[in-house]
Image 1: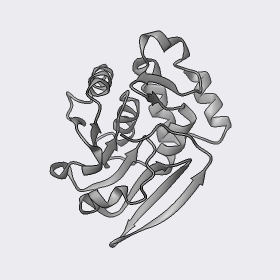
Image 2: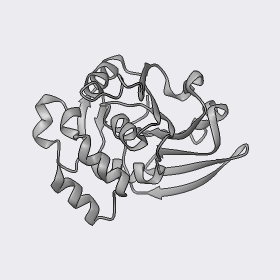
Image 3: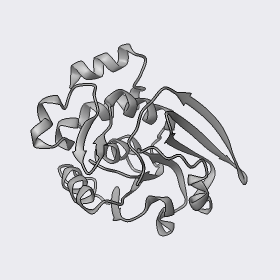
Image 4: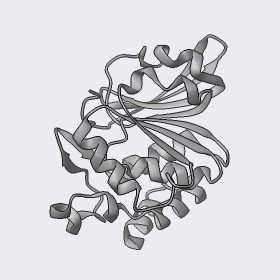
Length: 202
């Protein structure tokens, strides 16, 4: 894992908080048994049902872009293997992560992986089976939102608009780009970063 972290740093990725999280939350714990030998390779890996655990450099880029801070209240949409959820919880320290997954089999796979750490017991992570597009109103307002699968709909976040704090950040893949949206009143400022590939958001 340390070689992977070193390689990501050489590419200009991993701020200090993200680097510490990568060191403590081992991707090995979130990869299917048959693919564990590739856990520390900088490649996406299948977790079944057309879903993947994302390439580490892409996860690092998205987390750095999200600028997670201590005490953030975070919504993680499509948590899949659970790796991003655990990384977010580690970075946010005393904050909270509400993570939603729609595919039942993936939900239980991700849950079992996250349970290898203490985040759920410590109530730093809460998991829900359902449609992440609807958010989770009882845990709002959120100031950070991570979406880990591609969505062709620029209006994805309109369904959770009322669950977002002012200046809330949303990092979401759309087609082959990663977008950073920042809430400003009833509108969102947008920044686009091109050249990525993701599985569809279901």
